[in-house]
Image (cartoon, rainbow, N blue to C red; front, side, top):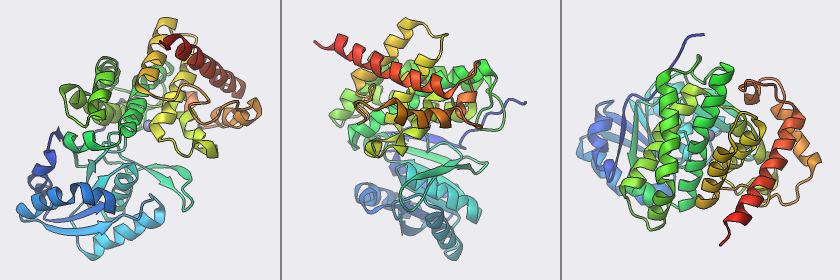
Length: 369
Ligand SMILES: [Zn+2]
């Protein structure tokens, strides 16, 4: 298998970076469609539209219906064709960005992602996560090409709810751990090959930045300010994690996280929160993981407020029988749990989840003042 590394065409991050949208997007096309919901437009609309109009671009303003469904992507793709748009700009959270990517692929135009939260790996990736009309996740799809531009305004990110920022750190913290597992197993990445040294190095850097600056950055975002720590962690959450997961691969942390939404109790959680618990499950599954490192990771998760126990997930006292469904899916064909250098059974997963919960409980108790 070849080594493959994929990435967006350009990544721009900074305080008030949205002011440069006109020049940056104008380099990609003259007719621009903005896709956002009313709330996001209320926050960044004035700034972004002023920049686009200031650069002399023609703007089609489209309201996102709130779900990344196939029907919504088809509706937006048709609008792109009808309005003869050159480039679509998804502005907002992961679902808006994912819909913009799918619509762009269907209509054959360029896509710009402009995340207003640093909560997940959507902005840089070639993927759309699909949902049905009831809000259930139904799978994901790659468009074979990454966004032409990722535009990240850290001033906007720092005004978003801190729980979105923490979720992003959960998604990012898993990147190096899953990359290591994939590499040891010589498993495939999500780009159709195996990991380059470049991607593995970015994944490790992502981890190091979070461990060094994560807590400090969270404190800054709680106060809605941008500091160097915030800039570093936004880069880790959005760029390094995005490049790392796609070009290194995923393993148990994401597989468990992807199964958790099947519990109604977990519906209030964001993807990155679920990955947070998935990480500890993966650590408890792997016999080649130094215990000091495990404690360090769990303690970091507790410090920034990621879920580390069943109770944190909204599943206090969950039975082994209920967890067995997750174990079966994780041990099934095509599972990301195949990306470990050892076989993973349904029982292994259930035991690792129970061990993760017990570990999380104990570290919380020990950390209490
Ligand atoms: Zn993820």
